[in-house]
Picture 1 (cartoon, protein in one colour):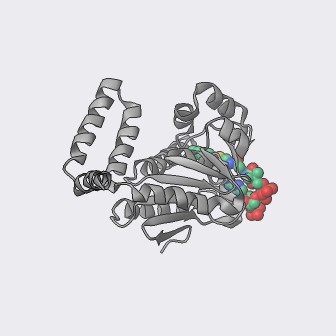
Picture 2 (cartoon, rainbow, N blue to C red):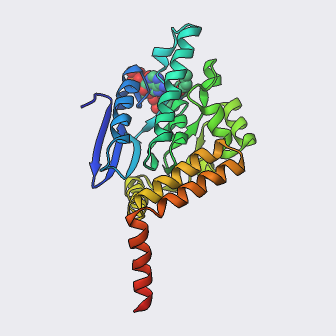
Length: 254
Ligand code: HXC
């Protein structure tokens, strides 16, 4: 359906692959356009419970925005490209379904920004992370200056953002940039295992919990607690809440 993005639905778990392996899955205008289409489709698909994002091939998740395409841009075009990237990363972040980044190799620049727009990150031991933009004479532009400090704290984020240092998966784990590191051959199986755990839980409850976690970051605590109270209340109007709690009660009677 798309040239640069592959989408497969494995029993309710969508696997979205960035598919430009010859360019280490660098994000050019075509990938961005395909991604917008694909993410719109995923968001509206009631048969997708969890999304896993990964890169095609065994070398790279996403090696950043396409440098060849960016090099000739002027200031206005640069800002437009940055805004487009921010929009796509926010579409990933705002998907109703939980999103796992299965980081199979390089996650650099826009690639790291894509990984941190996901709900969680599982990395292959071969993965490499960084924000090399300052070395190219630009700032990170797809949300990295904002999402990275929120995720790993200002000190470590500024270290990565200002030095352009590339770190390995183990260091990324120490930094809190990834949540798990596994052998390359176990990456997709581990991501599927995590996805299945979420699938087993109540779908509405998981999606509401994601909304609370997302919106809470932006809001003062009292407002965020009110989001939580509303989401909690809404769950009591679902079949899943009644059935799952009754099942627990029945089990305990035996
Ligand atoms: C375009 C890229 C690319 C990129 C790799 N390629 N990264 N093309 N944009 N970001 C292409 C190479 O040109 C090459 O194409 C092929 O992929 C293989 O890459 P090599 O460099 O030959 O591989 P290797 O020597 O193994 O080095 C891997 C690498 C290196 C360390 C990942 O490719 C690299 O440093 N890439 C750039 C990483 C980066 O700086 N990313 C941040 C970009 S800025 P050919 O045709 O020669 O085989 C960014 C900003 C986001 O993301 C915000 C914008 C607003």
